[in-house]
Amino acid sequence: MLIANNLSLIRSGRSLFKNLNLSVKSKSIVQIRGRNGIGKTTLIKILARIILPSTGEIFWEGKNIKNNINNYYKNLALVMDTNTSKNDMTVYETINFWKNLFSSPIKQNEINYLLEMLKMQNYKNTLVKNLSFGEKRKLEISRLVIEKKRLWIFDEPYLGLDELTIEIFNQTIKNHINTEGMVIFSSHYRLEMRGMDTIDLEKYAKN
Image (cartoon, rainbow, N blue to C red; front, side, top):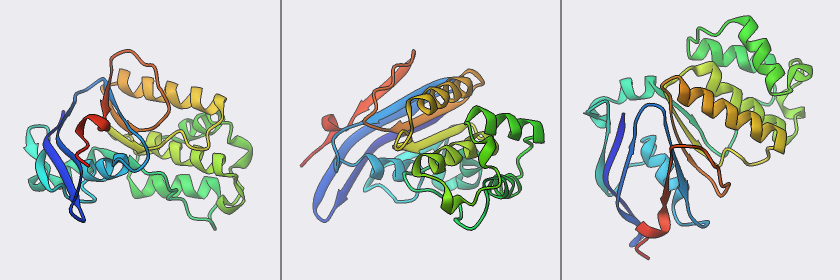
């Protein structure tokens, strides 16, 4: 379980948000909403401990993540709004790189099924630099399945996805939640999913 208590961030004398509490347990999903510039990406980075909050604490499995960071990262898959794949590697090389990097137990038949599910099977020998923006985002989504982490955190995961890929992505989220997973994401996209909680950053803004 992830719990964040009393989070706030002050930047250049301006408070982006204040007194924000959040909890995510197994089989649950939280969406962060709000207008551009209100701090959605900043909050995502705080939850991933890329940046530190001005106040507040974050706990993973009952322990403060600043004293438990290695265990936290072992359970965290983070996808930001920029791609992590290398332009001069093929799709297949990229997937195998991620597999080795994260010591993933994913099997070859699972990789093939994943590529088919994302409609990327015909691109496995294509260099990343030759993919469209949407295809790169689909490749980034595949990293979630490859890593096999319990907590997924996304920043604007729906950017560049067509309707079919959105359906596939939403089903991937449902499958993850049904297998004890947890999801936090920021987006303008209005996802409708049973049991989902929403955090509206407008309520915590102190401009």
